[in-house]
Length: 415
Ligand SMILES: [Zn+2]
Image (tube, rainbow, N blue to C red; front, side):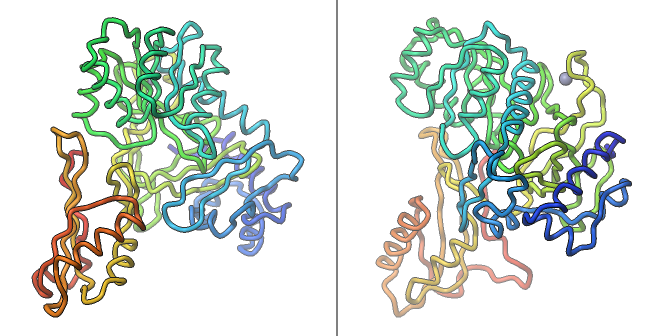
């Protein structure tokens, strides 16, 4: 899927505008001697942008318009260090709403629907994006936010919500509550729009069967507007994305070179018309592929598709909804007396309790008390990361060593 003429012109305009500013990327492009983009080759020679850039530019270094034009900011959760701040102009907000409304339409949602929105409202782009799209579409928004199951279900019943917007885990929780309380016949839900997480087929089937609804995956990230830049259509798993607002290339995460259509790689996104914080060739670390086969549906066949997100190209892992990195664990273990740098983490899902179980195995020298050491590590996990794993301490030398980089995290969950 190569850049077409219009997209190329749009990218060129973005680059020239950035060059005329003092923004973070304006400086980077000037220093790299970039003057514009007139061919696909020149586009592919542009440097990638990344979340690290956005952290370096914290708080507002990437802002590419005067303050008077910025109407709001959003921020992505910073599990490692500084958060990322994205400024939006009025047009950016409106474009986002247009894309999000298109997502709802692609899922067959109309003005007569009542959209029950459970993602959180605030600095992040979740709840407010679902709301914007809903209002743009002209449907009725029920802006619940997360939590308070009693209230959620009461509103769902009394207001006859027809669409549920939620994370997969929250949709699962609500579906279980509805089943347990025996109120399924009072629920009018027809569709679920699920965002922001990877979720297993098993989970999908659970939610679908319990609620008897169609499910849709919505794609997006705070750096690029937020959720709403793509969604699957009825009967398909691949997601359409809006190539009049964003350009997607799939690259080999190791070499940075584009891969042929249909081949898996990392999604790299270029915003074509964004004003407040344009991003060119932004590395998402999400793994997917372009789906070259045309879609069956008339409504959306003009929009290209990517496959469902397969995972992350980096090593982030998630337990109880908390993102974690091996580097955090290493740092934490280094604080405990007598503990070696070797460790491994096993993660599994307890289906009965419907929760993740995390087992950390690490090594300690014989001179320290293993029980106390385990307790100390557990406390550190709780206070520094916010999860409480099961800790096993074994004597130094027990865990396997390898010349190559050891695989630290063994994830047994069905992903
Ligand atoms: Zn389609």
